[in-house]
Image 1 (cartoon, rainbow over the protein chains, first blue to last red):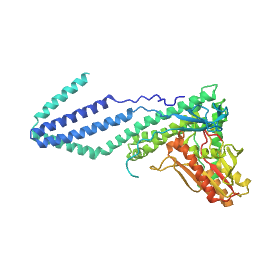
Image 2: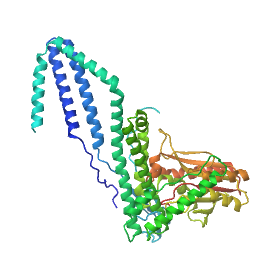
Image 3: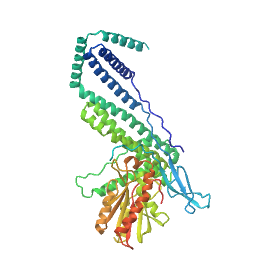
Image 4: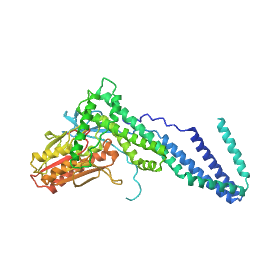
Length: 139
Length: 383
């Protein structure tokens, strides 16, 4: 039973008008930044500063809007990590680990032991979580 | 295509015009733009902020709707697979998702616990009957698991509807305060919804969940000993620990069940005419951010969550017989509590057993009788 399946994602509509607005904002902002350099080189520092400000504000606004859009477009899914079942022989200690199967539960008697032919017992069912790297702050 | 060409042409014209504009005129234009921006932010700043928040809520609503639909789909699939109903269970599941419970009036708080217990019993019976009708071929364990699956789907449905209500209300009234409240609690709401979503499949497949760690501790202690049933939906085993007699209690597994530990503890105390030296309760508890998952801590008091009926009963009984009560908790967050049990939590069960033994040695004498009660949903945990 595979549990890593990602489920179907819903359709999220993005208006073409919004996309065009973001595109125009970004283009104008980049243009303003390029022009500010030209004005600066030609000695018109005041205009260059204004254009630089407009350019930065435009790039920031465009990036923010794109980021918001991306958040909406992220594929929705229910992440299910693999669940493992540990089966143990209480007599000889022989241990096997396999993927969880429907009907498994802790302390359920299952197959016979390959070594001593005793009934084996499910002793653990859990999932492993890979921790993201710990934050660097000291608390 | 034409629009794109027109756009690029107009941008090129603007670009060449911009380079020819003299400095003074440019400064004037920049000032006018600045003043217009100031005026817009003065009169429409709040409205712009409102729109940004509404957009954020809307994108979360997409996710909540998806989770709600997934919950419904998983519940229906599980019922069809396990219960093998003759008719399509979908309309009945949809009706189930809309069930509600009206809590008792507490203007006069005397006796409210018993009224609440009665309402919860009625709810429980009604849910079980409904699941039996939905899944006629399911056995007792599967009925409990399906009931839990449906309850998780119900919770997702409720969260989605509440957030949608405030979103639409905020949009209709354009009230900053309605929208602001929802936007502020949204991260916590989303965490809870994601936790319920991961619980769905755990319940449907009968996998142990983080909340069941208390039951797991009790199961590890009682495994291999004679077990008998005690009211309600609990089991007890008499286990010798460190020269003492321990009555180990847990909800009856492996189906999704929390039982009524309050009634079980009361029964055991009364069977022993109050001669119990100590009670130790083990439960999962919500950790604070920064604490490690699976951390074990001990203290005093009745470690049991839920609506409070069982805690009330335990406190009443121990007060009557003056029995000391200790608690061992295993820390986890809300997501871990309802999703399949993490390895760290599973391993914490052994640490909790060590702590229990230490408590027994320190707090009781040889020959004493103690009650050890593992609280939590025993789904996927036998005994």
